[in-house]
Structure formats: structure tokens, C-alpha cells
Image (tube, rainbow over all chains, first blue to last red; front, side):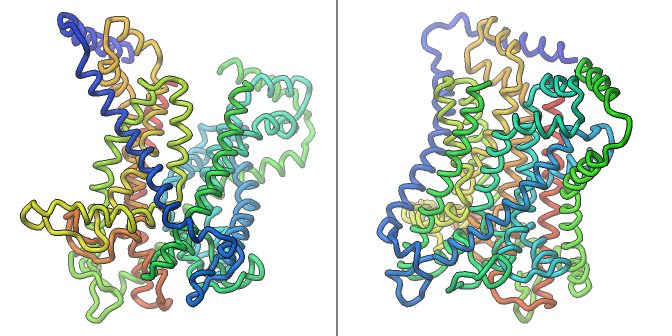
Length: 306
Length: 318
């Protein structure tokens, strides 16, 4: 089957070529095609450029120390800040980190090292992970509202409820990235370990995991950077009220987060709030760029070594 | 692979015969961690199904799937969800018209034309683009792209199309969303293109094909299922995106596909309603879950198609 498909393809290409061979000169059509392809990349990258330029142009004036240490205010617009949202984001992200990493990495180890792929329940897990990765983020908000804020866990509208909601959302990302890292560890390393009499867990603990760690860290950072900028699910699990004070802990008190604060400022009609929103967006973008750069740097070092 | 498996079998036979309970506990914990994904899916279904049934006890199915005015919070009320579906459709239409061809083109350029050095720069840039928070795209759409489009709207065109749009409208959100999805489509499509065996490409070059012929006659047909998977994933992101649409597409549940009309999508309705005051147990509260259930079912169907396609292209060359 595969050979016949390849053959027909090659014959088609050859036919088209022999027809072309009689013409000479510059391949105008080919160059045009290349230009169109390049244009679409330029549009995407140009959008990133203009987005960054716009946000910096709008928000630069309010990118001062007040932004980081002051509470939001509807009266003192020139000195208002979003300190509670920064603290809220730190709480939320810490919660995501401590829940998603152990579960995500364990699930990845199970799927790569233990699971028998012919079993139906392992296939079910795999399809579930693939599907969850593409469920709209706002649906996770509904899930968080039904079972984390109310329902079984009944945590109320606190930062940790936001953490659990976002953790469920980015879990597939962590699992998929960790699986790839584990799969990239050469089988020879495992066999050498078994050959020396190590058990399966000893092999994983002392040989597979250390080799896969950089890949797992990269995947985790990328998942965290997705969670840190996510707004929609947090709207449903409580980060909506105009929080004037820093929440006492991840488990009590109303909270906000940086992207939610940006959204609320943007929704207000006064121009000062829009400038504040742009300033908040700069902070968020710098944070994300830093996280992504670290992840890309780790990956680049990793590929250089092997 | 067979040698690895037989080696593993030998290794397994060398394991000690008495039970190591710690090992079993660890293996059980890992299996439970993997089950969490299934539990989350079950949780989503459970969270949606109860309130949705309650919703349909108060509002008939025929009223829900109709084009009557969308006003769950008002008297007289209206629950014509097809208006929200139309809103989502309009957003998907304008964003995918941009994202699908541009994503394919970007993937082709990166895989077939770009030098290794250029690819090393382009890939991280596209990844950063993929990582920009949607709320920032929303900000950009509503305060920059929207006003810009308004100023240069082609008013010379007669009829509905020539009317200058209001503060928020479909095209502003659809355009930004479309460019936002380009990297997603491009990266899946490029993965599929990179998986094509070199020999296929080299055979075509050897027969004297130009780059364009290789790209259009060998690379695209061979990577077709992967490209389709990228398209479907892009579509799924357009359907499920909330913030850009919530901020820039307006909030009128109009039954319109015109680029200059405001629309309300399914996601924007959920986001908007949960931000405002809403009393638990009211019909309007259950509406959020009913719309969420519809959204989940739609994206589930799209995702399952995408998963099938991805598995197909993996099988083809691995």
C-alpha cells in the first residue's frame, strides 16, 4: 500500500517536472509561492511585535513602583497598584505547582514505564489526557465551581480553589511533556540498571528520572506559564471581586490574580484604568517571557548535550 | 523493539521472588495518578449533567434549540441558544479563514524553506506567541485593532457591509483570535511534515522537482492527516476561546454573521454571567451549565476527530 502511494506521488511529481523542464528562466511561480508562505510568518510575528509595542506605549507611564506595592483604588488613580493581585497570583501558582507536579510526573511514569498499552483502561487514560488537553479552559472553571468551590471539596472562593482548577487544566500538559522526556531516555540505560539487579522502581528512581529531569522541568515551566496567564476559569472560581486588600493565606479570604485584575481594569470606561491594564499586561508579559526563556534555554542545553 | 522487549523479559525474570511491598505501593500510587485524568473527565460530565437536567425541567428542549431572543435574566425570558451558537460560528469563521491557511503556510515555510538557523529563531518566537496570555490579546483587540478597523472601514461598499461597526464587533475579535491560533496550527502541521521520510522528498528532488512542487505535491499530501489535525485543533481553540471574545466581540446575541455586528458566543456568555451577580439555583444559574454542556459536547466531538487524525499520521510513518 505505502509503496504504491509513494510511487504514484513520485510519478506525478516527475510528470509535472518534465512538463516544466522545457521552460527556462526564473521560477516566478515558485518565488511567489515562497513569498506568500513567508508573508504568513511575518503577519504572525508582526502581530507579536505590534502587540508588545502597543502595550509598552500605553502602559509605560504607569510602570512605576506604586504599581507593585499599592492596592487597587477607584479614587487615587495615579498611584493605584495591584499588589493584592500579585500576591494572589503567587498563592495560586504555588498551589498549582505542589499539586500538578507530583500527580503529573507520576502519571507520566506509569504510562511510560508500567502501563501495558494493549489494556483497555490504559487506552482510556491516554484518550482522556489527549481530550482534556483541548477542553476549553472555561469548562474547567465550571468544574471548579461545581466541585472545588462548592460541592465535594467546598473550599469557597479562595486562592487554593483557583489553584486546583488551574492544576486540572494544565495536568495534561505536564503529563504529555514528562512522558516525552521519559521516552527520550535510551532503553540501554534501563537495561544496564536491570542487568545489575536493580528493581523497576530503583531503575526509575536512580536512572530514568535523573536523565529525564531537564525535560520534565521544561514541560512544567511551560505548563506554569500557561496557568499564570489564564483568566477565564478564574472568573468562575472567585477571582472576580474588586479585591482591595491582600488575602491572608491561600485558604482564606477573597483573592485576585494579575490577568483577572487586567481584565477588570480593561472593562472600566475611564482611560486611567486602561493605562493601568496595559501596565499590568507589561508585567505579565515580562514574567512570561522570563519563564519561557528559561524553559527554552534548558531545552537548548539539553539538545546540545545529546 | 523486539530485542528491547525480550531484554525486559529477562530483566523481569531476574527480579527477586518475594514481594517488595514498597514497589507495589509506588506502582499503585502511579496508577492512581494516571487515573486522575479519567476522574477529571468524569467530574466535568458530572458537574454539567445535573444542573443541565434541572435546566431542561424548566425550559423545554425545543425552546433551547431555537432562535428566540437570548435573555435568561429578563422578563419575558428567552433561551434561544442557537443565537449563541451563531455567535461562536461567526468568530470561528473569521478566525479560521486567517488561521488555517496562514498556519499551513507558516509550517510549510519552516519545514521546507527556512534554513536551520532561521528555524532555530522562528520556532521559539512562535512558541512565545502561543504563550501570550489571552487577556493581553483581548486588550489588544478591543483597544487597538477594533478602533483601527473602525477608522479604515470600507464605507464605500453599499448595504450592511459598508456600515461602520460600533465599539465592539466580530471582526476585531476574529482577526486577533485568528492570528493568535496560527502558531497552534503551524506547530502541529510542522510536526507532521517533519515526520515524512527524507527519501520521499529526495526522490522528488532527484527527478528534478522544484521546491514548490515538492512542497505542494509531496509534503502536503503525505502530511495531510497531520495538517488536518492541526486545522481541527485550531478550530477547537477558536470555539473554546473566552477572553478575546468576551472583551472584543460585544455582548449582543444577534443572529448575524456580518463582520461589523457585535455577537455573544457560548464562552463569552458563561464568562460574562459568572462575573456578574447571579443567584444560585435560579434558572439563569442553570443556563450557564446548559450552555457549558453544549460547549463541552461540541469541543469533545472536534477533539475526538483530531485525536483520530493525529494517531493516524503517527501510525503512517512510525
